[in-house]
Figure 1 (cartoon, rainbow, N blue to C red):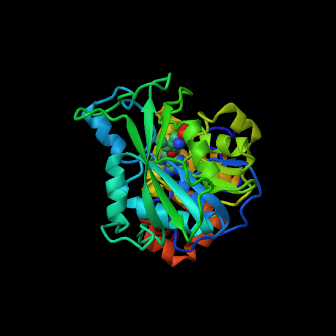
Figure 2: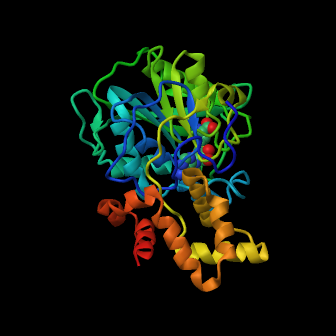
Figure 3: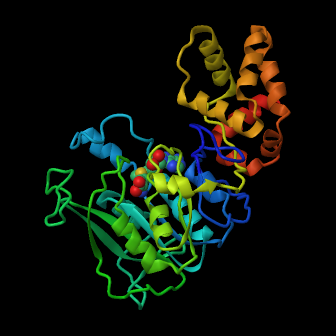
Length: 369
Ligand SMILES: C[S@@+](CC[C@H](N)C(=O)[O-])C[C@H]1O[C@@H](n2cnc3c(N)ncnc32)[C@H](O)[C@@H]1O
């Protein structure tokens, strides 16, 4: 596949949810090997309930900020990706649980901070089931933390990374189960050794480790999903093992070439369309200022323009039209335009979404004024 242009979704619309909608629109999951460029939650919403066989993922955790602020690493300073607030993690687990078929596994890469947060959020305490697993509020059973031990490139020693009180040479992989599924090989240890990949992708995970997880928890032909795919290593492992993959990430620039080549554009429909600008007034001000002074658009405005372009094929046209309109008439022109859009009309009819997404609510109230 040639990866889609920056800011474009291959098909359909909408990105950047703050929280997943209760009214989850679903379409049949695509058959095979796809990449989509959307917000992870929007991507997950677009998948059918009980439609995939394995999820392995590695979100951009809030704890990255902690490492950045302590300055324990130079790698994390600078413009990386936006992070996912801890409070959104329960939604992530709930969505992953929903899209997995019964009797399937879920692996979540994280550090020790986030491992604690997730266990607390999921109510994972002392009490264990008879089989030793622990029940989670999301419906999963939590089995254990696997460890990815980072080695030197020659694989002979641990490679110490961040932190001052014993430098960290490991990452956690939380292993969850929906229903009951046997691992394919019961002899695999819970510490997986591999050097950090040097493919240039931030926080990339090693193919060897991911391959073990895919091999352990799927059969040939089954469908593996990663909503925060980064380099797409999950896709690479799936390909190598004759499994199928559905990858998603807001950024496609780090995709491994082989994965990018194999991946088809995603054919699901992204129905949840959420603006990022706090209000249309804010959107208008910045867009006009941009046209007049060449000022840089904020990420939120750029996102909303992209969304208009993706959903309606009209992002730039709207701006040109607004710029050509007299100051005083601009809000009415934008309002009329937005009212004519089917996805806005759809959103206007869903009070639940409005309650859930304050920014959407602000836009809809402005449009209805
Ligand atoms: C820790 S990295 C994943 C690395 C990946 N496991 C690999 O091995 O290359 C997190 C990824 O999440 C992506 N991301 C950040 N926010 C996102 C969002 N809201 N939706 C989808 N992807 C997002 C980033 O672009 C980044 O590629």
